Amino acid sequence: MTTEADKPTEPRRPWWFTSRGLVVIAIVFVLGVLVAAPLLSLVTHVGWLIVLLALTGWLVVPDLHWVWREHPEVFRRVLRLLTNARTVRVLLYLAVAYAWALVLFN
Image 1 (cartoon, rainbow, N blue to C red):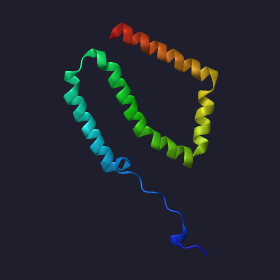
Image 2: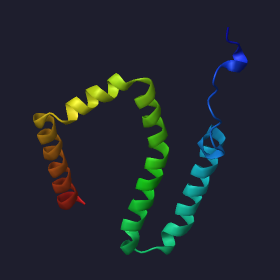
Image 3: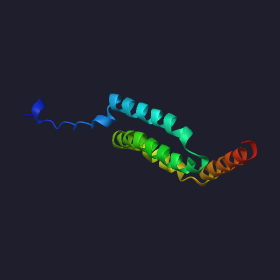
Image 4: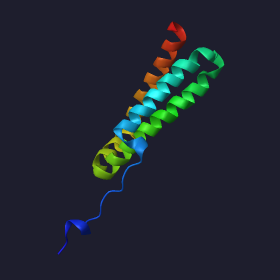
């Protein structure tokens, strides 16, 4: 007979994955960008892109991991869709059209 004490519990999440921690980090990041952006030149756009990609990955990966654990059928459907040649071709066409729009109108 098992009791509540015998059931495995989820380990506590680090403070930076809590809602309050994410708000604090987002505020610090936005303030850092607002203070540092005027000091930086156009050369550092790649650096900011890397920082934004890292921040986005840091925020999104835990949620993707949760979906992968809780709903693996969703991941299977998405992977099947992304390995379809027609879908990949449409995504490439959209990327090329977006690149042309940036070059021509920006």
